[in-house]
Image 1: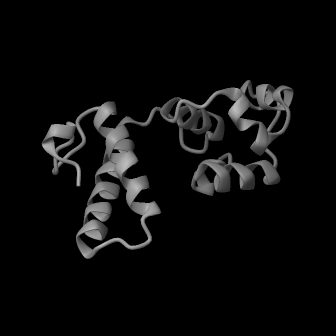
Image 2: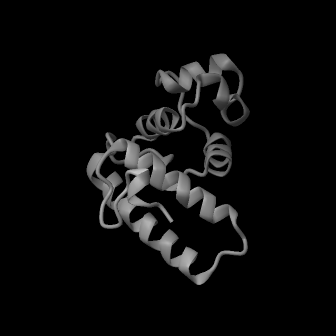
Length: 125
């Protein structure tokens, strides 16, 4: 459980730092296949708080997969080269991020699975 010492309150996420810590804790809990009931409840609460924070603070347009992908890269400190397994060679990654090439269905599927991105965030409006 995140404590006040870890800079996240139980009733809200106050900053990007809190958001990152809450996400880290959610991922930690998700990887634990033997969660207790208390840990399940903690995870549910944190997911709700993260979703509320993101609804207010995530800088992206609905249906803009590149904006979301750039946001995800920033949040997880990913470099363009980290996208090569999902998009293709570095030239293709650059073209996609600079909006010179659209994401293909295969790219969307690999990005969604590999980076844990909900597929609807990768489909253009």
